[in-house]
Length: 224
Image (cartoon, rainbow, N blue to C red; front, top):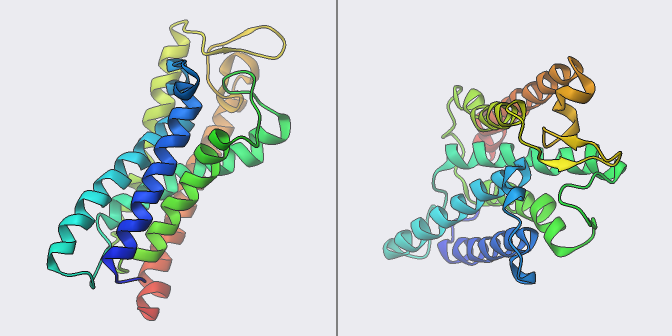
């Protein structure tokens, strides 16, 4: 754990800039466009969550510098753990499920551009790294494991309702409209199998949450 608020501030400002730049680039802002439909995807919403987190951390770190440059730079540890796990789903689902099939989220998609790498890799890893480097162990509570599920479940419910009401998120490779942002819970195409994927994702969150909790209470606490 690094106890230098100056290092923490530099890291967080850099991470915030990368996250915001990648997000805006993915939205098409730097090309004079605005793909607001992209906001429907979990990738974008989880990135917004982490951008908000980094913004909060920057403000709190600046406030902490009033008490000196040396000292605890870990703030909002429980919330940061939740954000880190929630956005890790973005990284894992994209690179494991979507990238191999060249699944296109917004059309004309290239995997090795800055915007794609930022939202699907850099921002998730920076969030996780911030948690590892700066948060003090021992702050997590067992119920935090289940709080991790709130954001993704709310996302699933919200987009499912919108899709069932008839909104079309995108067009599939076969030319048919898709009412659900991701194939693994596209009820139109895979039916009840979608519940298997959803159950697996919830299990993923619970398993990773337990791993974080165990490390926080046992491993990091001992080393700290």
